[in-house]
Length: 324
Image (cartoon, rainbow, N blue to C red; front, top):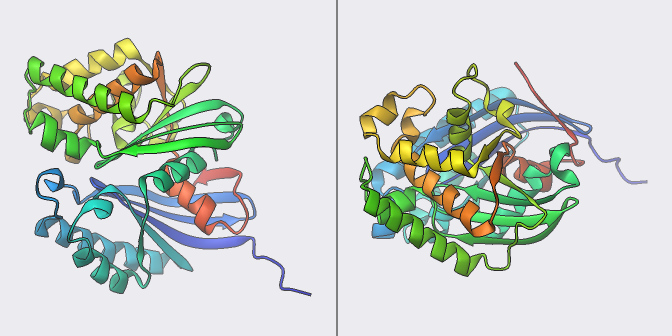
């Protein structure tokens, strides 16, 4: 008789993105996942990557410092496992080993660099861990710093996933060229280029009969801005809230018309996201145009929840609780 499977686990998930590191500490007991810590720490692995092809030294050092701190906190939490995944910046940087080698020594485990398609699959797994979306026909647009993924599925079953290297940091660097405020003609040209690129890459995706979900820091920030009249909410409390296309266009033009100092001073925009939020809003606007959707719903269970569900969970979790 074999050893019965364990149904509990304390672990840490690290998502090394092009804009920030997402860090989550959780404890799963049976089918209940309790999230004890969830945060995003900006390190900008993708800074100027679209222009140079390399991770800059400042971003590499900042990332390694954050990994040291996350490893320490994971140990204090009693994490039995740490799993770290790398996305767009680490997929494309020519000098990625300069970060991956010391990161493995710090964490005691390698950072797993995943493909854009695999990233989309894990985003779908995380999104559909929320019961509201499990039986729906959904499209998920996941906007990161280096790439944007579009994923479709129905009834919890993935149909297709695809990726474009057009995340908010890349769009800021290569298309908007750090112009803030963004001149109207530059904003229009950026939207046209994004729309054309998405139409070519995502031509097999359809929004007919589906609901569009948006994942990532761009979407949570825009949703918080849309809900500015409400008291400030925790990120997970934004789950399911919708932004209609006309309101998204209003938000985009508001963001594009403000100076960087004005955006940094805004109470609903995280200071470290201020210089990429206009670019992110461009990506989301283009996604709505290409899919033909009239609104986008915020989903807060992105890649890190999919990593837990597919790569860590002793049994699939069904319920998530956020510890206070």
